[in-house]
Structure formats: C-alpha cells, structure tokens
Image 1 (cartoon, helix red, strand yellow):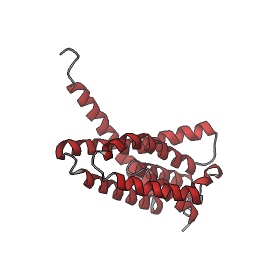
Image 2: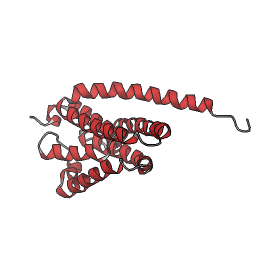
Image 3: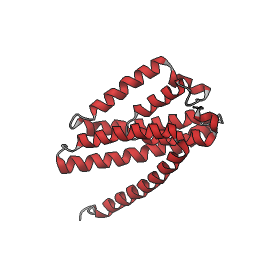
Image 4: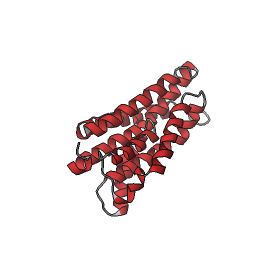
Amino acid sequence: MDAISELGTLPALMAGISLSAAAGLRVFLPVLALGLATRFGLLELGEQFAWLASDPVLMVVGIAALLEIGTYYIPIVDNLLDTLATPAAIGGGTVIVAALLPEMHGLLQWGIAALLGGGAAGITQGTTVLARGVSTASTGGLGNPLIATSETGGSLVAILLALLIPVVFGVVVILVLAWLLVRLVRLLRSRRHRAPAPGG
C-alpha cells in the first residue's frame, strides 16, 4: 500500500482530520496509530514530526494509551479524566493534522492544524463529555463502562477507516462533526435559556 501522503495532500489531510476526531474519543490511540503507520510506510510525516515515529515516543504513547483505556473504567475517575482529556485531545488533534500537512509557514501550518485537527477533536470530546455526564446523572455511573467501551471501539474503527479510506471516511467525519457541532450549540443555548435569572 502506498503512503497516504504520497497520494496527495487531500488524502493526508482527510486522514489527519479523521485521526483527530478519533483523538476526541481516546487521546493517545490515534497518536500511537500515526507513529506506527509512519513506521510501516502508510503515512509520511514532515521532517520536524519524525520524532512521533521514534521508539521512545511509541513506547511512552503506547503505555499512555493502555492507561487511558483502563482508567475510564474506574468510577468517578472517568469524569475527572474528562477535564484533562479535553485539552489533551485538542492538542493531540492539532499535532496530528500539523504532522500531515505539507510544509508551509509555521504560523499558518499550526493555525490550520488547530482549526481542523483541534476543532475535530474538541467537538468529539465535547460530545463524549456530555454523554458521560448524562450517564452519570441517570445511572449513577453504572452505564459509564458501556460508554467507555464504545469510545475505545469507536476510536479504533475511526483509526482503521482513516488509514484505509481516508477521503471517503474524512467526508463522513466532517459531515458528522458539523451535525454534532450544531447539536452542541443548540443544547448549550437551551441550557442557558433554562438557567434562572440572578435574583429570580
């Protein structure tokens, strides 16, 4: 299989957006997949991001991925972990897209990466945070392991599809993210309108 980056900028960018969305489900799995895919010749990173495929980074990220997956099965801790995972997911998504973009001016490259990669990860993560909050409130946390399992599984499936059919899956991811963003905005607006006025 040819490296995605060798097929053109669009497939690499779509793969980056899809992997970033997967980072909103599990932060370290897509970063690990990015490094491994580079090692096996499926992706081609910019020179300044070659460290993502180095042995020490792959080892550390692999351990972090296992810890992250396991920690989400611990009651109460899973909700606390979301507070740390949200900025980490946005950062991870930004790095993933930046690593797959063609070389350009640093500020422009990181700006595009933050918008596309960080945005994709942030929207996905925001949705999972809300879902876990609803589950915690309605089931006392008993339903949270099911959400944790679906998040890990969803991240793995997204990673696989991002590498196999980057353009097709990337389009699907963008459409789903746009729909989720609209839903999140509407939900936040409705909650703001329901909030009691000060002194009311």
